[in-house]
Image (tube, rainbow, N blue to C red; front, side, top):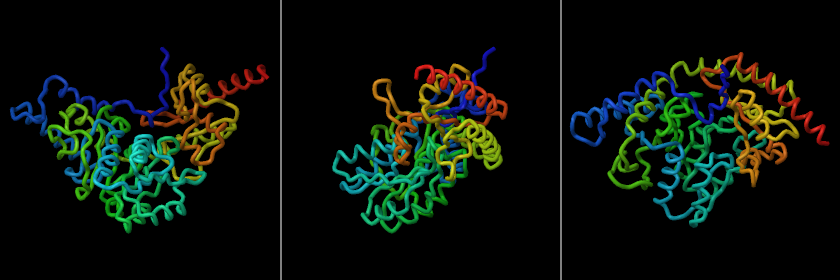
Length: 385
């Protein structure tokens, strides 16, 4: 039987069996609303409290700092829009390689009278210290720099950046969705360096979709995006998704267990993958920067990324294209353009992101399939010319 190989774990991950087991009773046997006062409701509330504790422990936070949301995009929007609503329009700074869930709300503030500074990055995708220092002189009110990039895997020194910003009294947020579960992340340590909020998400760490959290310094005031029943300390109204939050809590607990050993295994697989890619002539982006251990972002000259993804999918390997595009308007990755990668090479970018169940045999199978696919594509190109 044909068994496709999944190599797109930065997009989403399969749910861990222990997570699924923890969730199942809350779909049918335990149907209570956590706001209800009867036994079913009290059981649901207890389950939410226990999940909140698990998330907090895994992230190095206090349970009262954990605000549950429906996803990472909502959590980041809650911080940026919720914080901005507490100020008169001023300067917001975000890195030029942010996920759209940070970049787009920042740009939306720009249409509402805010000044938006997109912090430049170097050729490896790291924040440029000269541009960052210049931005700080302009006294920003809000700053957001992601902990690890979803495309390149580049890890930013968020603790140092936040420490530099403390003199401005800016509120500092970091999107830790890709970093959490792949590298140690401790909110208390980051908070001491000046980070006021972190976004983390369940489905990136073998939990269910539909649950995430904004981990928030209790001294930071936000206006809620959703008003109503006053859930989540009034910051996120709406009946809690008990099964998903229970699963999120369990996934957090599992994700941080033996994290260094898991990272070392993934790094070894990634090194083997990249050695094979080099041998086939690939350009690997951000190779000189510190990166997540599971992420490789690469391209081949004169090979379209979407075409390569489609061919490899039919060969049984699921990977991701780096182009944010439609068939009518193909656009290369804004992350690569910010890194000054030539647009024609950026359009060829594809990402492989390894996971907990990825094996060396699968990596070698992928490299063999890639070699065969490249041979076919180059032959077709030669015939067309």
